Image 1 (cartoon, protein in one colour):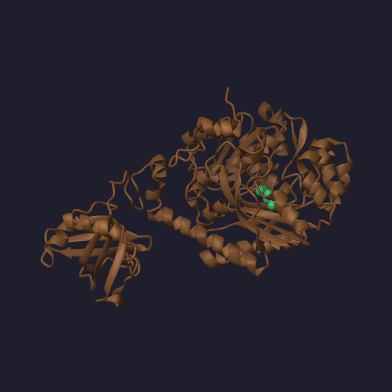
Image 2 (cartoon, rainbow, N blue to C red; image 1 turned 90 degrees about the vertical axis):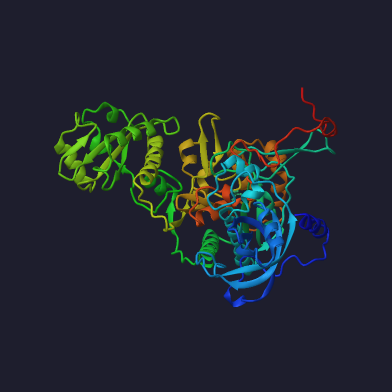
Length: 602
Ligand code: ASP
């Protein structure tokens, strides 16, 4: 060990040496008898008496190194002292292995070591650096640098790199220019809270971190840049959900002199390019579905179309038959679960009833009708509906023996959304979603405005810069809330496998229309001027017609690989409390910094 320690000192500080001439993933039988130098981390070592085997790992793979007592006792003894994750350099000869490991690309060869240099020692890692680690989430986040050494995490970062690279290639080929926009800006109204940064030089004033570069990219269109994109970090101070991060990355794009069709085809092209070049999958042309149809049939503006199970509307069939819950409801609706009647036990139904009653769902109860294979019917509303009536229902709704009807009732909008959730949940519980299918399509014609009962005002469904559809422009002048609610926007979302991967719109480029829209959204003229004067001003200098879109890069990666968590695709993500446990942030500032910033905490 002494020898080795000496060498550490020499090697650590000798920056002239060649550390490696091959990686741990590339040697094959074709390299037999070559003298090679490898460097990496000790994945594992096995001491078999006369021989010691070390699995040496780097980013590219694992190569087996063999130390033989008979050849060099000291070297072999030194190898035995190496612990997991020690960093070493090995010089040796490539030999054919007698027992080959064909699961590993380098598994037909091994390196017979002639020299071993310890480049750095390591503490025993707090969890195993294996594909299946024994470390829990929190621990792995705290030691993310060890976590990233694991294949599944590393592979996801490499995958993300490929997605970014192919995005840049595709867009650059179409003459998009990548332009950086500032991070220290003022509030952009995308609907979430801003993260703010105090200004030392302008005490009492704050920058906001961008929720997206929305206004800047529109101004770039006014500036004549024509086709812009940016792979850019966005910041939103929202309560975190499983697939949300306070900072995330968008593929942000804007184009001038385009109509909606141009944008949809350009970015459908982007997604097809990513799937083709990275996954070798040809996505079929994307369907278009209106927001109204998506809500009506699937109870969601981002339906998962890998399975059917459309919402069935039952008012005429089931009301006024003496069941007060249905009779008093604005809407009775449900879904048909194919071939589920026999599979789904009473216990399953009870569990599901509890599930629909959770506050997040808020249904009052759940009605089931099972059409058993033997022709009998079992239902929780058997008291109110005769078997004949339920048979009639089956005929009307194309229900077959073996199917199960699940029915909810209540306020119209809520019930539709609940049916949408129930549809998804049942698809999961019945395991009918094919894993290797991608359903990608556009949802178009979103409402422009959303009424908020609590605030008693309209909010922009997308953002305030979205243009109404030309055929609905007249309605903007109305004072009737229902008419205003019916205005459709030139907005679109790309949906893949039930997730919104991107969204955008054709923008307003006319100052008067933009002012009118601000007014509808409850901004006084003064407020609009204060917050968006720069944009309104820019619109007075020849703003071209323009529109754009932004994709969630983290989410695109996750969807492409069939993963549900975007966190896996972020090198240093935050946990559910918005904390980075590795660097322990957020944290307090020292008094001096606070004073400099003019921040007093009482
Ligand atoms: N800025 C929008 C967003 O972040 C996207 C867009 O309209 O281009 O959702």
